[in-house]
View: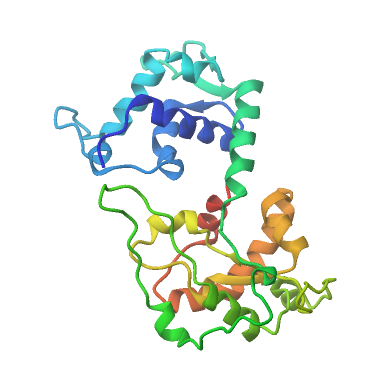
Length: 272
């Protein structure tokens, strides 16, 4: 993958400002932009002429700001700090304007629609035969993320695995089980409780775990439509409650399959 151009980094830079929701320095943007974009080897290659050997994308971010790139600054307000008594000047700070906030909100909503590529019991017909699976073997499958042109491929999901997980969990919402609650379910056209399979660590994060596969049993969580909608559309507090209990329940099994992630990193995958 070749080095990215300036325009590629603008939205990730705006994402950093959106998450901070406070005046943010260039250095903070440089350090955190990696969470919101796919960096190539060339992006990460340091400039040999720079004393700190900063990666090339640091220079690109700096250029966007120092050259007053209008595709960035139409969404951003610059805060010029007053001179201090020290010889070193205070750095300029940046804050999203209202137009920038609306742009990033729209992007987040559109991405949450495709965050985990899930199945629902509606996707299975009553006459459909599901192959018997060796769960341990399935969990060990690796993925191939790139096609022959070096482009990212859509990570495939296993319909048989999703159905097996539904059956193993007794067609029950796992949030309801963990909270010892009764969540109202309706039956689908096949007479089965309607549930949706959710990837706890979104498939969009596959690049962070390559070549491990995130479409494995410990990462598949049957949810009622209401709980699933909360993870995509709910408030911060609603998402936090659900993700915390699911993370605490599943992290040991994920670790046993070589997948390690902190709770804070998991929250970042949900654009929180």
